[in-house]
Image 1 (cartoon, rainbow, N blue to C red):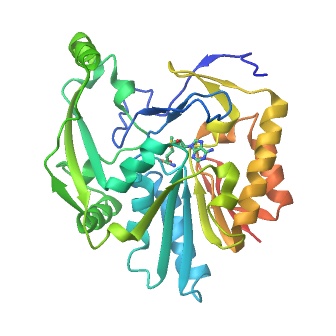
Image 2 (tube, protein in one colour):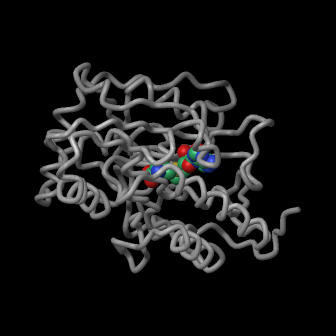
Image 3 (tube, rainbow, N blue to C red):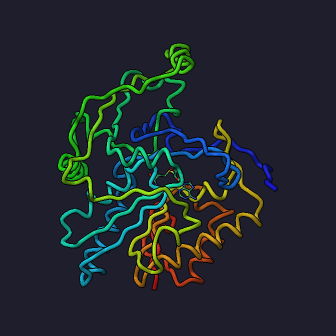
Length: 324
Ligand SMILES: C[S@@+](CC[C@H](N)C(=O)[O-])C[C@H]1O[C@@H](n2cnc3c(N)ncnc32)[C@H](O)[C@@H]1O
């Protein structure tokens, strides 16, 4: 029951090769046959440290000001992928004077196992980027290269984040993952179209490793992850499109039937509503697909009906909602 009526090439914010946004992880996890998410059989796990920094700054200030009286804060990082985002939350809330419980969950089993290892890669594209036909395949949502590589001028925020990063992570030797014969063959065949990539690996420091917990979980079954109204901040950034569009391995994305989208969003918002406590935040982020014409009116209407109001806009979309 899936309508693939208007297939368009997937648009990504890093499509413009003149503005390279690179780092984090751009990869997919193939789903087990018994896991069904919309019309997908792959999960896209591109992510990065300190993605959408203005949104992060809003969350930090909100915790400090609006939850000033609370000594303990519960944060649930949905669709956490390999944990870059979850540790980002840990870094920005470190030393906020509160006991902050942070749990990252993701539908992808492999992603969660990677997150638990606490080893993270930061990458830099070197060489002539304009001639890299396969550049898109290696790019992710945001640029965190500055955390690990020498860049000439850092903004005040970047310098602050780099300091936080150095307090959480220690560089370790990067070990290239073992490749199958076919992967090596593909590498050799496409080498000349690929960008040159420098990779550095980092491990979470032992004293920071217990700041984040990771579990496999589905946002549509939040009851299995958290108790009702105990969550102060719930993030599900850049991921709702997984539930509302169809996409195959070659990254063609198409909306699902409107009835399916409506039902899915209604159920999604009910889960969010049940999990978040009074004054709590729901962070949807700014991904275009999560605010598209087929998703936004239904999402916003359902959130409003449940008593949520937008409190922070980024790129003209309501990225953060507050439960009144
Ligand atoms: C593009 S990543 C977003 C990562 C991160 N939130 C960020 O903004 O950098 C999308 C993630 O959503 C996860 N995902 C998709 N459907 C999900 C669901 N029903 N429940 C939990 N996670 C899901 C995917 O496995 C994938 O890791």
